[in-house]
Image (tube, rainbow, N blue to C red; front, side, top):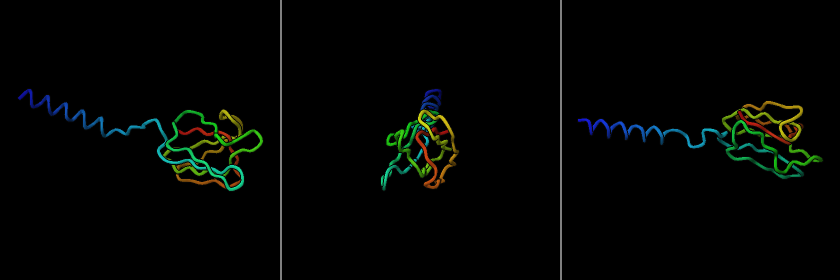
Length: 107
């Protein structure tokens, strides 16, 4: 009887571990943006709580028109290193071409 209980407990623990999402510290989904004439970029399943500089953004030309198709809130910043003016973009929301950004952090 004890062996059966131990096996059941072990099987339950394994099932629980497998049920937990693998990327618990990531914003599940896609964060898209535009840069340059007709060019688009995206971050897929970006990490949460860490500042991400937009790879294609430069000091002269920021990215623009962010689209947050993740499950997390994205805070986009006008400057690199999550500095300067910012805008909060809720999940499944898109901003206009007027919103410029160089970095983002996900909650």
